[in-house]
Image (cartoon, rainbow, N blue to C red; front, side, top):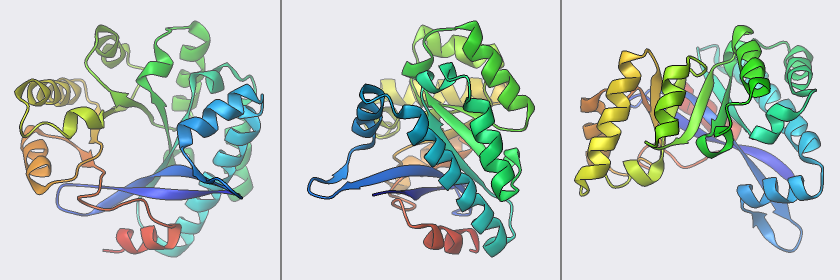
Length: 237
């Protein structure tokens, strides 16, 4: 059976601004399946569109329930793959899920990993542009500092970046990582992009990132992934 859990995201002061929706699939005998393996199996089995259709339906349903229970500004983000951007019915799938639950695109942010958008395919660019015009924000997940990364920041296609956890997790003791993260945050701010630091686990990391100007944070320092109702409690604080 599959379901969503939610990785809450916070400002440095501890106020919750939303969450990333994470798919959890429990195999009857194998237990919980690692999400990248789920995506791999869905691609191999040619049922990735059906899986992502279910993810968007569950995410939109969660947004509707959150609206009804909290009445506060928030967002929930869902992940897609480059293969999803090739899917002709992706935009219809997202729009139908939103209409089914009567939610605004502004509440549904979309994340795509940096590795998945190495190709600057016109088809991808047009689809991202149309989805952003409808009100969705697009984030680059697992953002590093390669040459392609800088091109993405300059492209105007994205609203923000999620800084790779392998960088944020070593900013205290590793000077090169600290300088890379500082550069990403400063450049993003100049370009009007928000930044989300992933895998923040220590107070010292949060304080350093906050001093640098990071927008939002997620990680075990603030919260592990939680069920939807627990997420509502965090929004109420």
